[in-house]
Image (cartoon, rainbow, N blue to C red; front, side):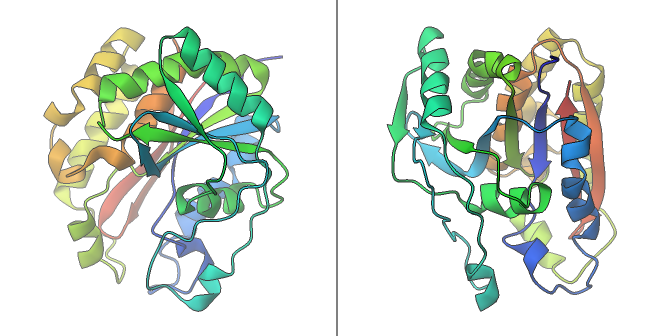
Length: 270
């Protein structure tokens, strides 16, 4: 059996896929990409390990909850978006396996037995895997936001790919909230900084050898328009984890969308 790919997916804005928007088609292209994710992966995974931009902890923390609730960690949206259901199970087996791999790499980790799925998990995955029949373990970012450390986490977890686990980084390739909020009513013109950063990111991920890619991701803040695209990097760092887990696999860009005045991309390794 071939190993699972790793994927970096955009999770949109809040519960964007489950509410009316102006214009109505604002999130249609991203939603279509997410619905196509199972086919792009090629087979149903045994489990998913998801790194969301919306969970940071002092040390790498692994969700170890057999029945995670949903954390409606967004504000000011229609009441219906707080009634979303996504009853995917957790998996202590896979949580413990992740902890073992991290420990073997010298990375300290903790368990969280009560945490639920934040919207970086349940919003995109309810679109991509609506049956909620694949166990999910969520993994935190670390609050130091160290790019090299997040790549190392991915490297440690790479063996999960040979155990039929899909490693998913859920963030946004562009996350400057000032730009996105200015374009809440549907600008289709990409901000120059978002296109500039996306061009660099795509070229680096899809053409670089693994060593060059790793160094570029460590030094990402020196890339063209990097700090305009990510004033704070929590929405980019899930990519560092999945790139670390990619090993020698190069990326292919699987989505390029312009939404709320910004270019947003998705990537798949393997």
